[in-house]
Image (cartoon, one colour):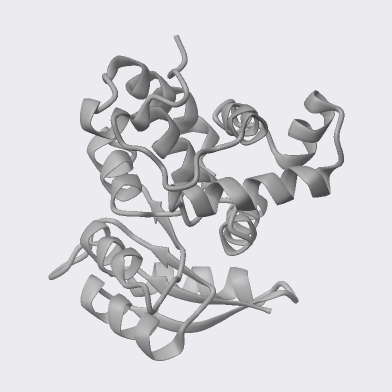
Length: 220
């Protein structure tokens, strides 16, 4: 059972998410929050599997709440940012704060539920309508030279680097396995290894790390 906390300042939105999530057998909304402060409190109190977080909320906004949740090693709760706003500042702000995924509220029910499952499984997710723009933005940014000089305590193996490059193309484990002619379970093993080495909680954060560190060249 995937336990979910919903954080949104609109009661009708929280109610809608609750009805949608509780209607499927493998999920349950265990708590709600109307602002960022409550979201952090609910996570600490309930220890859910996923937080569905709005961006614009009174008091403490969703980006700062995401940052506090992601930065607390005792929580380790992934955040799926779900909002009506797709401005770049919100997208990158949420991802840089440690969000495991970003989804627009206009997404259909199957996409939303799939995103919750993906984030809960540690895969991360990014709304397909934003993917090209996000990658294009990274293509225009120079990797941070300080991060380029960083050396991992345990460097990535050639296979891990190869798989990380394919993750940056947006491929799933099954698609990576087909591309490399190996078993999906082998891909999963290597993904777990590279996540641990780069200090990423999920695949999405690993992709961001790859672009910023210069290990993988941005598209274009």
